[in-house]
Image (cartoon, rainbow over all chains, first blue to last red; front, side, top):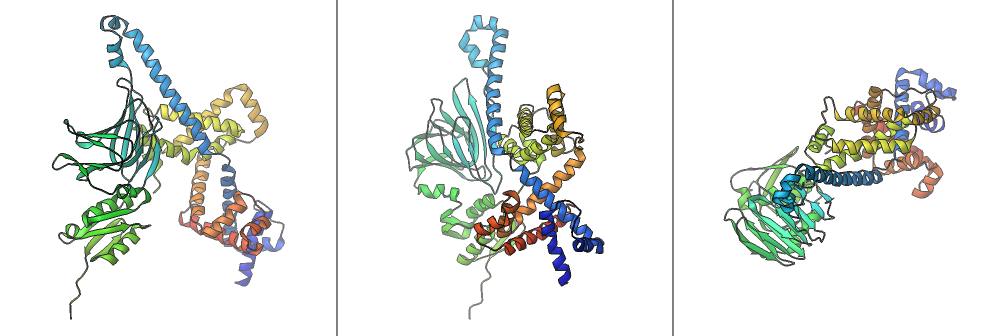
Length: 333
Length: 179
């Protein structure tokens, strides 16, 4: 055993000093030849060592720098393509133009830029920058489609999920459309928007500038920094809600502020954040148990450990399925 | 956690630029090193791979992948590299440098690629200290003495750490049936 240990350790010296499968050390060679297993293992180590060298060599290719090039070329090409189409259509539609006038043509034929779609999976968040310079931090399970409308000169975003927007100032209005015909119009501001299809309320919290929240009819809310505007999907009403702005922004630090939040609502948020499925064993647990406090845990395991400590729930975790039940009441004696 | 290339590609076909970005970051370096083996020049190889991705995005609607995405990327890269060599001047330059080496076989290269990807995953899973030593030694190419000074440990410890890493990598790769 001692002997084996000693010879095996030679492998590392060998790999560092003489590459390849041969060796000049007779003792070591003897060890390799003495058993087919030694030989097999040795060749595996050589393969690993060479593989590491190849990976190390690859570090010289920097995808970050290359991506800038590629991104730049693609953005440039998209612009050229759009321009080309305008010129082409201009010729084709010349006779029409004489009759109908340039503005009509421009309205109907000017192509938009290509839509850009950005999504985040459940359990992940990411920061993205849109072509106009606007940056958006996307929370788990969100989808954003950006398109510049040349005809109306507006920046259009179709959005579901949650995101913190830092909108680049620009003459073209930035319009975010959500479910239920709700839309948010801004020029250059910072705001948080939470609009998950499975939430009962859509809400936006402004941190800087000014936004307008419109419903599908004519109602609208004008928000100033620190204010939160909400839309209740059940009643169809828009209203200012009294909320602590930083609670609504805390998801960016993966903190969950709970202000008398029902277990059901907590579970829905955890499902998105950690990509798990939570089911309740027993009636009305989700509605009956409420929490107030802050949750900031590394993993879903830690989250449930914490919830278990502060409330009357038990839980079992099975892969990504989590079942929550009421803690068994101990008989009083 | 890691999305398969197939999912990424299907999202790319639906105009998802962030999936395109992910695919790019995932394969850029390996495609560059593959193309370098054909054109014998890493600057040219980078240009070829960048053009390939630009084309991939502009033709995204037309792409049909029968087998798997990685095969597709490597084949496309190989074709671009060979096209590049069709220019007489480039060919001469490459031949001079490669001498009589054969062009790599795609299948061979893909097996190698699979192995390297698994190896990379295994390296990621190494215990923090072992990984640090391995990266300094093999990636930064520091001498044992320099590592010893930087981490304030003995040369013997470094050797032990490297050996531990190697053993770990071997069993990790065996689990992933990489050999």
